Image (tube, rainbow, N blue to C red; front, side, top):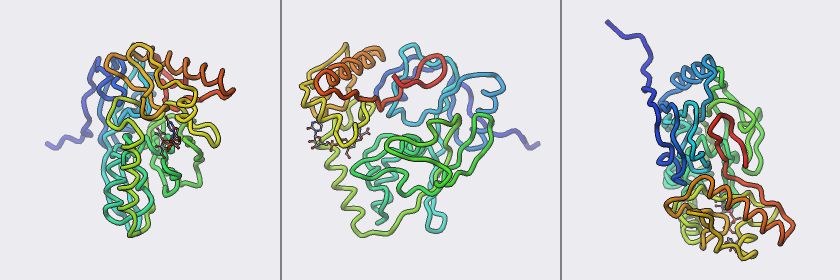
Length: 298
Ligand code: EPU
C-alpha cells in the first residue's frame, strides 16, 4: 500500500544550538528539525501556528547570536537547497550556500553575485539581510522570492512587492520563511576575476574562518564602523571570551568560551566608547535571538 503521508524530518528535542552558528554560541533548542521542502515548511509553520509555538528559521547561523539559555520553541533548519536555471533565471532554494552560489555563478562567467563569495550565510539569510559587499547588494539582481507565511500560506513575491535598503528587507517585518529565490544574472567575461579579487580582499582584511557573526555593527552613513572602532583604539577590548578582532574592528570573535552575555556586554561597551569619542551611536547588525520567542535587536 502506498503511504500517502508527506515525508517529514523528525522533531528532535533539546538540541544544542552553538554548533549551528558561526559564532559557536547558543544554548539548547527545546525542539529542532530540518526542513527539505516547501511543503514541509508549510506543514511545520502551520503546526507551530496551531499550537502557539514560537519558531525560528535558521540558515547557516552567520548573522545571529542565540541566547545561552537557548530557544523555547521550534528551530527549523532550512535545508531547501535546490539550484537550477529556468531560462535566463537562476532559481535557488533558500538553504543553499550563498558563498558557493557566488563562486559557482562567477566560474560560469555570470555577473551579479560575485560579491557573495565568502559571505558565510545561506541564500535565504542573504535575502533577509540584503547582504552586501563592495558596493553590491543581494537585491540588485533579485527577481522574486517564494515565502511561506507563519500560517503556512505560500506567497510568490516579486521584487516590486518588497522593500530593500542597506542590510534591510521587508522580511524583517514578516513572520514566516523565505523558501526559494530567483535571480537574474548577466554573462560577463570578468566575473571570475572579480570574484577572485573580492575573496582575496576579504581574506586580507577580515578574520576569515574565525568564530564571528560577520560585522557586528551597521556602518553609519558614509563611515566604516570598523574604521571608527579602530580609530577609537578599541581593538584590544574584550569581555570574557569575546574580543574585538585585531584585523577588522567590526568583528567580534569568540575566542573559545564566550557566552552570549559576553558578546552583548562587549557590544554595549563598544557602543559606549564610540559614542563618547565620536558622538555616533553604532547600531548592531548582529541579531540577538531571545530565548523566549521574538527576535529582538539588542
Ligand atoms: N578600516 C580600518 N580599520 C579596521 C577596519 C577597516 O581602518 O579595523 C578601514 C579600511 O582600511 C578601509 C575602510 O576602513 O579603508 C573600509 O573597510 P572595509 O573595506 O573592510 O569595509 P567596511 O565598511 O568596514 C563593509 C561591510 C562588510 C563588507 C565590506 C567589504 C558593513 C557593516 N560592512 O565593511 O560586510 O564585507 O564592506 O565590502 O556594511 C557584514 O555586513 O557582515 C560585512 C562583513
